Image (cartoon, rainbow, N blue to C red; front, side, top):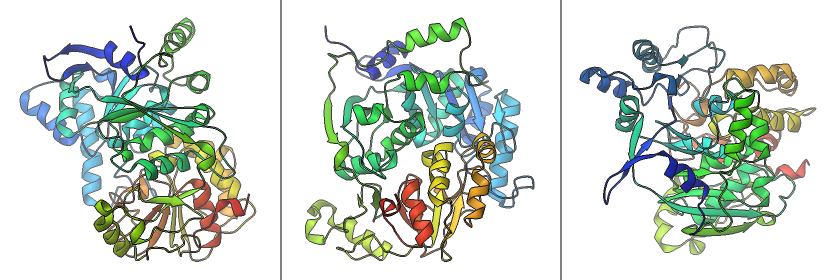
Length: 466
């Protein structure tokens, strides 16, 4: 009998029952809730006279709609204020723990779960947000769900799911100078496309992945959704255990020892078979940047935008439309292009390691005059740690400002919007048309590339400074 993959071990353990020829009823260990996708779900429970089945397995936070300045004052935007207030009322009514605005544990949902030790190996985790895949970095099955599914999990603590296929993506070898996890995942998406993993749950493996920190692994899994995957995951190891140990909701004492022993059994067996396997060399990856309007339209920063002839016929219409929107020409070099905004933050790159990397890069330098920079910690805990480590001071001396936690300019659902026609180098996860504001032009990159750009005022290869 063949061995099992990491995904199969967790999935099989959580199947409550299976519909013949249909989906499985999957037990959900942890349900994260935020203000955008939950109001209709709570309203559905109220209409049917149903309570939340297991409020202790549910955690709520406000993140998408909150401002990143003056959080001690009422939210100015009417819709944002309504949604944040509605979340608080719903959580109070249904007994769901809430880390709301100004709570010491408030932050982006996919940042606070790991940093509080709520996210652990072997779990099934869902949230009404596509980037729930972030939590898969711990060796868990984590994926985003829709509003009706949010209601189902609140009501039953289970979910109807078809079992996806499995894929393993191996990255082997040593990463080059200036190459970080954001570059790895942008490279993979540029190679396989935004639909290359559709229908699969992806396990990332190989020596380059094993050598990453937990925060870097979260960045990879966060963007697995951008290659069409149902979710991404990385097998738990000593790096995982070290990260979780001692955190607020991590097991303690004998329970910790027992948990680690169980977690050690999770990695895919040596003879496990995947439906598809891909292999890439770490040495082929350089700092990446996107030039178009989806995350698959990315290139190494030293390269030029493809010419029309180099683009596959099936994607030529999309390519042409993207070039018009971005006001770029096929064959253009990316280095030297003008930039107006730089954004460090989001559930992709708003963790303490991201702020550390950016601050270390800009230390002793000065922000370019033409750049507006938004440096946004992913949570209050990240903000406090940045204060403690002197990161805010380094940033201010270089002409930057650190804002308050929130999703910020990742998406245009709060005050942090990139103005129409402006170019932003962003460490977030999506560069769709209007994603960062109506008419905003987004180029996805790593914190190091964003830092180099913020110093020079134009797209710059971070290796020039390293």
